[in-house]
Image (cartoon, rainbow, N blue to C red):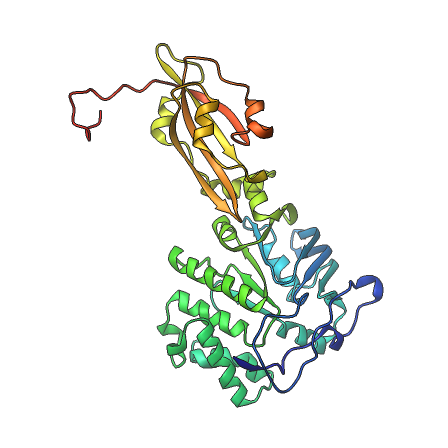
Length: 407
């Protein structure tokens, strides 16, 4: 697939920050005015680093700190998720990367260049290297799909023939080849966001910023948009940085996640680690909708102390994803007293790591083994084991009832 690289710029073409404020960046090809086959970006193109970034807003009540002491590195070609509750500072952080917001303190570096040192002309070049999509699409209602996608190319002075070629390439990429003459009012929410993505990619960016890009979409459409973004990332090597309040979005697409709370970093790391062993209350609160709660019927049967008569101990086995440990029902049954029953639970795979929990009922006839030995070393059957309560043993189904009957 051919395209013009006329809009590509290299760090060498931008004003450079002082040496102390600059990190090494791999060389990128100089722009040319011919055509070249579309391919992933050069290694290192699209890296982002924040160093001590803070943002303060003035308000009638005084200064409000939206961001404080943000330090992070986003590798080129990765998918990086930023999550937090409303007012956590997500949008402020995202918009410092293309200088829609100027930090009050600290540095933002793109491919090693401190973007705070750029003049207006260089800033225009930077923003052509950073695409952005929005929650409510921001399409021009009086323009066709073709014209919406073509807009940034025309503003940049690209030749009409190249504009037409590039727009049709992008329509094919986002699966809207037959919608080029349609107006936004005739499109579904998912189709509008696909147009927004195509427009953001028009100038061959290294970085794609996604501001709550799926919040206005239904779950099925959200999944399709996330798969499109993942495909663009894998195929073109574009760094994708997204903000959201939905942990399910982070789980599905991101490589790393930053949890923001009141403008500060609460947690930062690979998605599977943050999901598997959350350390901050804000992270646990955001993860709560994804966690399987105790079923109401089982909760109603639980007692803090063993009830009279036949009863069972209810154990919860947790899996964080560390060390490749996964539930092995045969080993679990061997390690626990006889009569183990699986009551409830679920295990997800996040970045190849098994995470979740199992609820087991264990009869009262015999002591429980040492949990420390079952959560560490070669004999481990789970990362954590705890007794969450006791329940009266369930009555057996009477033998004179049909097999499918219940009591």
